[in-house]
Amino acid sequence: MSTADDPLDDVLIGGREKRDIVIVEHDPAWAARFEEERARVVAALGDRALAVEHIGSTSVPGLAAKPIVDIDLTVADPADEDAYVPDLEAAGYVLRVREPGHRMLRTPERDVHLHVCAPGSEWEQRHLVFRDWLRTHPDDRRRYEDVKRELAARDWDDMNDYADAKDDVVADIMGRATAPRAPGTGG
Image (cartoon, rainbow, N blue to C red):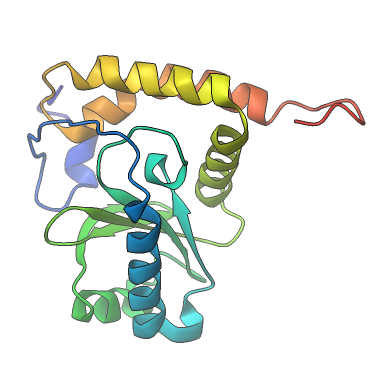
């Protein structure tokens, strides 16, 4: 919930936005949309785009999601906005979040979120590990979907509040995803 000393005021460009949270069944077209956006990012940045990965729920086959394609874009230094933001804005993206180690741009339609991070950063690794775990662990995928559906039924002042409400289930799943495993036990 928003307060006078809201830390999001320091990172959100344009302030909080009230949006309905709608969860829909997985759409195979999300993978094609990612490929279109990946091509647009690479065309804008060339080799400055060190990696472009489909992340978030739309990247996990069988997982219901908000119909917003999340993408991790790895650049040498996210804080060096002059090295990439103007070119991404020229390609049609709008800067929305500025926080240490992370920027987020989105399409004007708000159906693509482009998360910018550094190579090997905690931001990058966390999202790739979570995606890969959910792709191969149906019980956790179902559990995460159930929590998302329950939370989406609530009224939120801002999408960030909805995202924050998932922290406990995400932390629990990440605990399993990053736990050391005995040799030969798989993952």
